[in-house]
Image 1 (cartoon, rainbow, N blue to C red):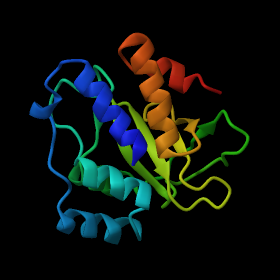
Image 2: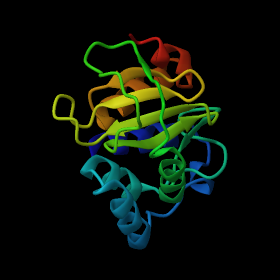
Image 3: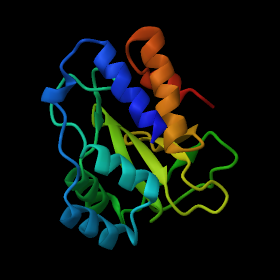
Length: 173
């Protein structure tokens, strides 16, 4: 996928050894388990996890605090969240008010374990949209129309400032 190649090129251009942090692709067994938990693994998420199975230690691609979630952490987050009633607030009229965690929401990135980046997998009005979810407040903000769109927005911020600003993403109302 072109955006992943751009992120790889960005990382190489920093002359920081991101290879020490590079994880292998997600094992097929983990992808199968994730598919059982979610009903299916969207192609966007599968391609990300096949590129690298998250990040385990700094330096993180998107800067301090950010971490691409490995498959096992995605499953752990979903297991903890699914079925729990949450009154979520929305700042985007295209996002409905949810009382429970929707099955189509799959976290793939987090910031300081307090903000989740979520790929919405089956929403017919917004397929593969990326949302930001504030775990403490329940606020939900649309970050991008797709995972590649989120990565492009993140890459633009990286090129401008060397980090991805969670504040600018959560305030992108």
